[in-house]
Image 1 (cartoon, helix red, strand yellow):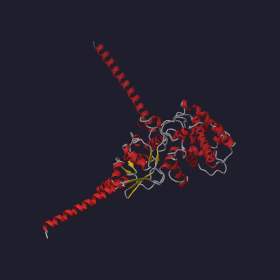
Image 2 (cartoon, helix red, strand yellow; image 1 turned 90 degrees about the vertical axis):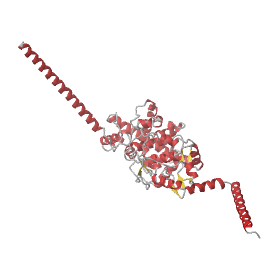
Image 3 (cartoon, one colour; image 1 turned 60 degrees about the vertical axis):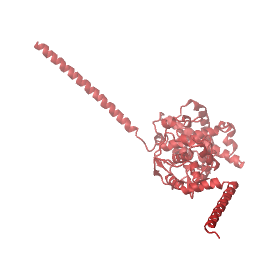
Amino acid sequence: MANDIESSQSTCSEIETSDSVTEDYECKAIVEALNTAAKLRIDSLWSAKWCIFRVPKVLQRHKPEAYRPHVVSIGPFHHRGEQFQPIQAVKQWYLHNLLSLRNMSLKTLIQGIDNISEFEKRARECYAEPLDLNHDEIIEMMVIDGCFLIELFRKHFYWSCRKVIKKDLVPAEELNIDKDPIFNMDCMLQYIFQDLMLLENQLPWFVLECLFGLTLEKHVSYSLNELVLVAFRSQRSLACKLEFYLRHTNDDDGDEVLHILDLVRSATTYGFKNRELITSSELILPPATLLSKAGIKFIESTDCGIMDMDFKDGVFAIPQLSIIESTEPLLRNLIAFEQCCQGRSPKVTSYVSIMNSLITTSKDMDLLCRKGIIRHYDPMFFNKLLNDTKLNNFYFTGLCNEVNKHYIVSWNKWLEKLKRDYFSNPWAITSLVAASIFLVLTLLQTTYTIRQYYSPR
């Protein structure tokens, strides 16, 4: 009996020991898993160097096609897409042409990149997610895509000059336009330019600058900024804004350029440096038709930057915006860029927000179209651009306050109503004058009759 008890106690002790070992093992495994997770978390913290992002799903869901390239893939995010393989052969042909014109080998080009390991590291740090490409793959992609863009912009520059001045600045055989599928297929160039203004379809600007410097022609006076902006000036909605930027800036102005989309943003918002950025979560501004009834006049601003709005003495000046097929994708991607990038303030988002407040119905859109401010007829155009966006800082708070002060003055409303109802045409003016004369004569007759009654002769 005693032996049985001792045996039972021994068995229980072994079970307890076994359970303790199991618990220790499981605890150790959990600690190791948490340590691993913590390490991964540290590695994935936000980086201020990120400037090229995948558009968040919450923004993409409203119009996914506005954020995806359709003809050409630039950079790593859409690098392996099957639909972009046809253009890949054109990229390689462009690279060959660019190097041939410089009598340069591919090896010489790559050797010209200072500290290629640091070059790769810096390029990776620009993207907001790890890139599934090894060293050779990412260098190959950067070189092919970067040289393709440089040669594309260079060709477009000389091709445009030939169309304008009817003269070849470089030999025709050097441009090789006759054999170029991009310049000989209808609309292909426009589709490519649209793809190059997508947030997910960017190369770091320093990569383009490096390759541009290594392949630069002798005795060339243009900069990379000028080469790119002259190309995008062919987009009708951007023409005036980019032309104004090119005339009034140099490469040392403003912030460091991050990529092509960032350069386009800087150009379209140029001339807007003195307006104060105010923390504001809500914008309250009456629509254009109500402001018009309160006596506020809308005119087209003489400035070209979309941000150059002004309100003075009851006159609201707004720059013209031509809304064409490429305008919506461009504005969507600029807004997404401002929402994601730490170093870029919400200038374009503020612009779209104030335009969304001014245009709530087709009558508002009609009014601004008649004034030459908008060239389009979709009253919900600006509203749909702001879906799921957040605007914590607003550039037009001061301007909106001035407009609202004018709007709430009742005298302005009544005065404008009087002008609109009684001075809008000659017949209305005649009727008002006749009615006023009749009223005055009636008062005089009444006064005379009363005086005769109380003061008879």
